[in-house]
Length: 77
Image (cartoon, rainbow, N blue to C red):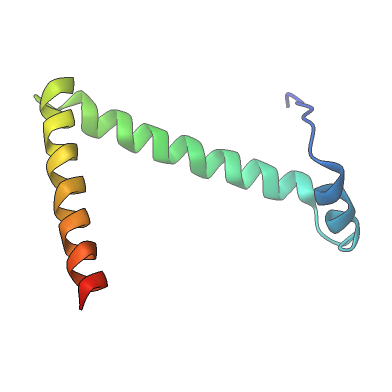
């Protein structure tokens, strides 16, 4: 098995030390596996997409505008 090393903030490390019974390497491995699974799903979805980047940007702008209008209406009520 390959090993990796990474840095974490001291504050986080101190919190982790409160739970010595936790196998933190297993937690990290599970999080990495989940993240990879999510990336693979995204890759699969986008590989079948016929939308261009410009199309996606237009759709994104419309969604953002719609959400802004919805929240603006809620704030004025």
